[in-house]
Every structure is written in C-alpha cells, then in structure tokens.
Length: 200
Length: 91
Image 1 (cartoon, chains in turn blue, green):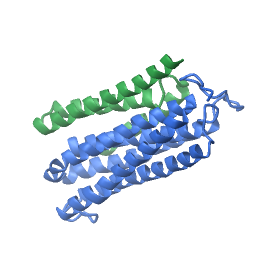
Image 2 (cartoon, chains in turn yellow, purple):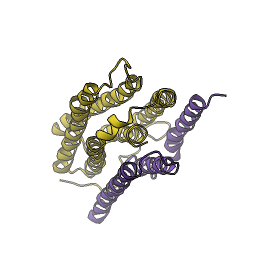
Image 3 (cartoon, rainbow over the protein chains, first blue to last red):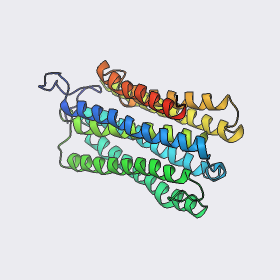
C-alpha cells in the first residue's frame, strides 16, 4: 500500500481560506461549547459557594473517578494515534485504534451512568436537589458531558464504518480530524470537571 | 519517513504519560493534603490548565495549525473566565 509521510496533510481544499470548511465548523462549534459548559460551571460554582458540596460523597468515589479519568485520557491518546495512522494510510492500524477509542469512551460513560450515579443517588445525592442542592447541577453538568461522550462514540462509529468501507485515507482524513478535535475537547472538559468537582 | 511517523507516535505517547503523571500528582495532593489548604487550590487549577494546554497544543494540533484556530479556542475561554468571575463575585 502506498504510504504518505507521517505528517502528511491532505492537499489544500478549494476554499477561500485554504482550510477545510469542516474543520472551521468544528472549531466554531467547540468555541460555542466552551461557552455552554462555562455557563454550567459558573452555575455549579455559585451553588457550591452558597450551599456547599457534600464532600464526603465525592472523596469516597475519588478512586473510581480517577480510573475513569485515565480511561478518557487514554482514549484521547488512541484518537490522536488514529488520525496519525489515517494520514499515513495505515488501515490495519487506524481501524483498531478507532475501535479502542470508542470502547474506552463507552467504558467511561458506563462507569459514570451505571456505577457512579447509582452509588451517589443511593447515598442521597439526587436530581431534585434534596437534601443536597449540589446534586441538581452535578447531574446536569456531568450528564451533559456524558451525553457528549456518547455522541463522540457514535461519531467514531461512523468513522469506523467509513474506514471499513475504505473511505478513509491520507487524502480523506478530515472526518477523523473533525471527530478527533471534538473528542479531545470533550476530554479537556472532563479535566476541568474532575478538578472542580472531585479534587477541589 | 518512517522515523517521522515514529516520532509523532512517541510525541503522543509522551503527552499521554505527562497527562497521566500530572493527574496522579493532582489526585495525590487532593487525597493526602486535601483541598482545604489555600495553596492546594491554585496548584490544582494550574495543573488542570497545563493538562488542557497539552491536549490543545499536541492532540488538537493547535501548535502546528493556523493561529486563527488558537484564537478561536482562546477567545471563548476569556469570555468564560469573565462569566465565571462575575457570577462568583458579583459587583
């Protein structure tokens, strides 16, 4: 199979900026997402400053959430590797790395929704904010993040199908690049949430 | 050509190792010292910002891409910072 250089970029697209429109679109979307998550984080900090946080609940789940954080950071590594392999035209490498990324994303969401949430709810951190009002913003914020991870997993699934059909390669890597930007952004959001919810 | 490819893989693995080490240190600090110390919170925030910077620069390729994307990424952070500041410290 003919292989392109490791850092090969697809030839400049025929746009007025010389940058692929998909990529500009994803970056604009990410900019709007920064504002979306910021407003929720501001709400969390306000509620926390006024009503406090049930610290003991989060200390007891620190180990589990730390493992989950490593899962998501590892998925980011595989996502980055996927793009490098796609640009190189290494189909046998990018298909498994894309699959591993999707599996790690699924593990992250599964731990969050099926293990962490039920445990916190059983200990009194509920959606309706009784007795801890912190619960309402906690589930809203981390739930939205989890939904973003799920959307990312579906998007990676689409890329996997395109890869299996042979529609990805050095000259057609913009799809993987777009989902990669989205995925890394979702990872970055979790790093913020992990720090402000669980560590501080 | 092969060497360049290997170096990009090594670069990503290096960033991952750095992220893992910083995360482990953060958790260690939060678990052992606790977040009540006045010095711990700024340290944890700086560590989180450093990790985001690593992800943005290397995994999202902002370091090598056009600077417009970096501006597009940083500008909402400025607005977000103002939003959070004014929310937590209203006039």
